[in-house]
Image (cartoon, rainbow, N blue to C red; front, side, top):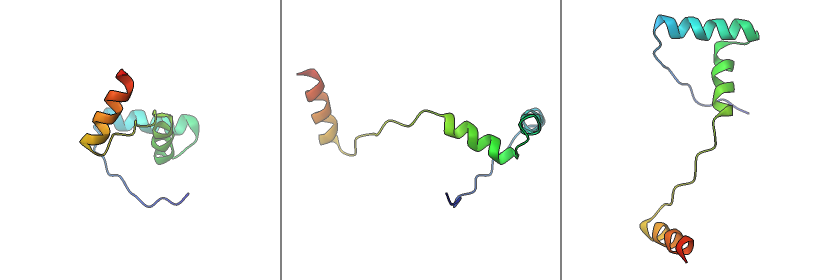
Length: 63
């Protein structure tokens, strides 16, 4: 899978040390550790695109 996006984040020294330690423990790069955590996140629920869809979904679950 191509990696088309880059994320820059700010960490304090404690956060950086925790990330480095986890990467070393797992013998991975810090980026791989972060990507692994992202993969474990639950998939987002699909939000309705319009008010009509919201109303339709609401009425179908109530009836």
